[in-house]
Image 1 (cartoon, helix red, strand yellow):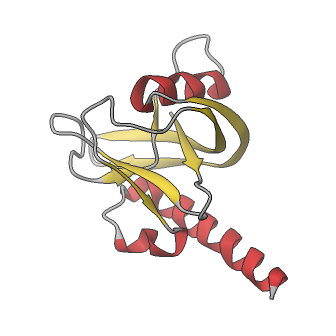
Image 2 (image 1 turned 90 degrees about the vertical axis):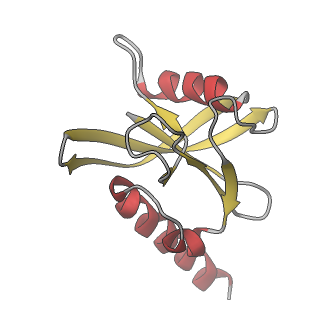
Length: 133
């Protein structure tokens, strides 16, 4: 699976609520989805963001990968820094969307698999802040 760290001009990252009927509905996550057979991670991310958010994007760079074990499944996930090429994110998959500052991600009901991603994003933000002060 692939997920996107999409940032707006204010440095906030986009998160999406898992819709009713999906595994762990009501939890928040970074947008993304499954990689189809024969598809690269980067291509899957661009496709998923088009299908879920109605945007054209570019998978800029993989930030981190992990494997997380839930009681009923194991998820292999790669978080990519992605850039919006055109369009504004909108809910096309019955999910709520919101922009959140990385420092506030811990206040959201994020999927347990995303916890290491949150920590990594917050560390990157802190490093950037300390180099600009």
